[in-house]
Length: 479
Image (cartoon, rainbow, N blue to C red; front, side):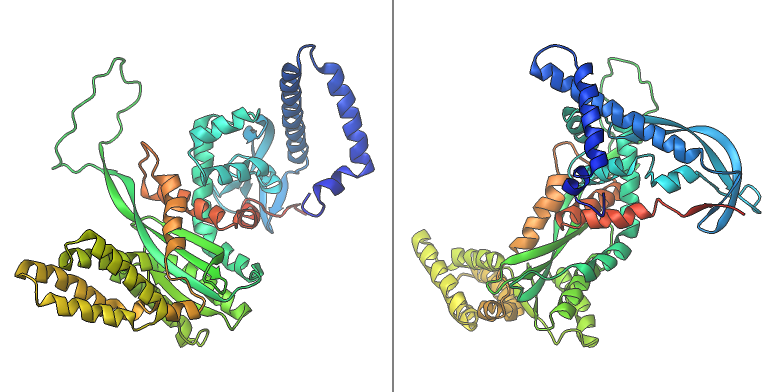
């Protein structure tokens, strides 16, 4: 149904006739009882109808292959018969199919032409494959299985869902750079686009890591039943700082119109993640050359080094003339509030002064210079300990005040806060990877965050169309 809409499909005479016959047959088969029981029976009949029809469809494809086939032009010969076990939204499919071995290679690789023609992804039909990829970006597979069952679907066992999800996520990680590069040129800019802004941040994620030999042993739990499987290797849960980044198209007020989100575990190089964000900047500027460009994030120097270096490459290539920079306004006000606690004992006076400073930052770029001067003048009056504490804030302001020119940011249509990036840390990482009892391996977290970020960037349908093609091949009869 890629080329026709749902309404167009159901408007076809042959489809209308099929639906009418199906309604008549189902109506006769429904048991007597109340509406709820009849609805449940109807759903069960439709699920089994779908499952058996798909099973027959796959059998028909499997029976159509000869002794030798060409798979993307490479010759394979029939190897061994067998029964394939596949999964759809309606249950399990058992299909008699053959494997084929590459011709001319001793003990060469084998393929299953049925899977390549039907586009079966990790043992799942295309519809279930997309459903699992979508679900894995939202929740763990135990919850997803419950959701499918509650919708009167017939999901595979939870362990099977987990296996399918992890393998799909691994493929998505491998393919993401190439597929995203294909998607970007087709993504238009929304009306009212004035600038593109990037930001990089970090957030802690619980990671399951091998317990070192020197670490004290955990107290063994008392077991009420004998262990049936081999004990897992001892681990320790440590929180590591995963990366999250955003590239937002903003309007004249600095409000995000479209945001692309990215995330990666702490073990990955943040430069790889930032390269994707900068690729979004390049695509946007090429589509609308007059767009402003900016970086707005918190003050962590290591984050600024990575984002600046990436944008410098665009500037060196002439793609952009330059960019504006801003430290998240909330972080700046937090810093100023801490400085006021040192010099002003009265809470009401501190609050009034902070409001004055906040208003001045909206009025002129030189406001931060005046604030710095005011704090410096008060510094000489303080005791040594308080003076040292205030000096830390003054050094921070001196090193970063060029990124506290919020009037310039506003006139450039850039946001004055990193709320979009902070939000991505919660929506992409927090809601998927920091739930109660969760702990992650590096590959597992990478896969889940990749699918989550793709979904949160409104790219999953297009991404899946390209990813699913990696499970297909052109299979033809060999001469």
